[in-house]
Image 1 (cartoon, rainbow, N blue to C red):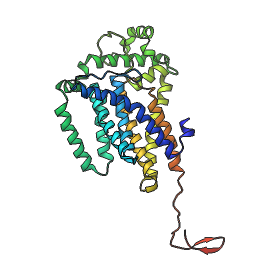
Image 2 (image 1 turned 135 degrees about the vertical axis):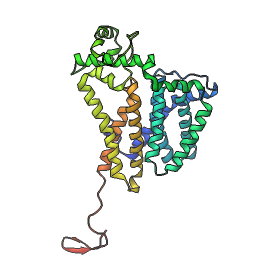
Image 3 (image 1 turned 30 degrees about the vertical axis):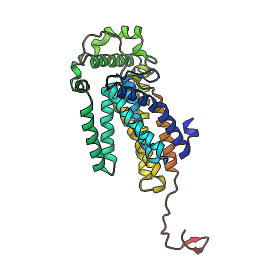
Image 4 (image 1 turned 180 degrees about the vertical axis):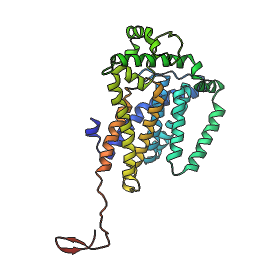
Amino acid sequence: VVTMVMTTRLRLHSLLIALAVALAFHGVEEGLKFLASGGTHKVLGVRILGDNNSLALAEVMMLPILAYLYKYIENKNIRLGLLGASIICFISVIGTSSRGGFIGLAILAGGYLQTSQRKFQIALMIVVIAVLFVWLVPDTYFERMNTIGEAHEDSSFMGRVIAWKISTLIAMDHPLFGGGFHAVQTPPIWLSYVPKLYILDFIPTPPPDVLHAAHSIYFEVLGDLGFTGEALFVTLLWTGISNATAIRKLTVNKPQMLWLFDMAGSLRLTLIVYAVSGAALSMAYFELYYLLLAMLSVMYRMASSQPKPPETDPAQPVLFGGRASEGV
């Protein structure tokens, strides 16, 4: 439906505004609770999005979209609202204590620093945010983030590795279509593959204790839909990022298409965050991801259909039907 209907700048912007209202609402709500409690409120997630890790990824993915809307909406009150929502959503990500959310924030910082033409200002802003971050966030947060470099000693992470191994075993038994949606989370399927874990013993893991979700968009699809689904999923992700890059190349240095250039950059950064942080989260079927792919497909058609500049020198006469006419 998006590829057929969202075919104008106004409609694309309307969709982004709808997404911002729908998803940033949860981040603002949880972020305000975190601030009101003096940092003691633990953001556990919301039912519609999942646990704290899923909420963290959703809010990090929204930050580039909020930044884009802030740049292009003219109403000052709405711009202030978007700025405030961005700050509070950032705080809500901190409140989740999600390691995937922390990695996503680091990717955003690096992405803006790399693509911005005002690198000094962006670098200065990142430094200021980092100083405030270190000053305000409790030590327990950094203790949890430090476990990123000690994955082999983290029982939570090793449980995910076991789930990845079982997802792989399911795909090896059912390479074309996998075990069906949420196969690894189905107790009979999980229990039937636990005795086969020795096949992948070259990746050392402790004995499985409890059932785990896939905890990776890639292994989730692999176990659910087999190698066929995995190939389609990765191809879709690569196509979305490639479309965004192509749009920016087609619209660079075209003032009338600046909005398309900036929107493609924001959505590309959102997809990169999803691709990296999603590697440790079960969010392969997150609707926002597929909406962004559809939007980028429409945007690529819009960028490709722009008329090319004339090859002739406009200062020279142009012949039409054998008669000389001044260049237009």
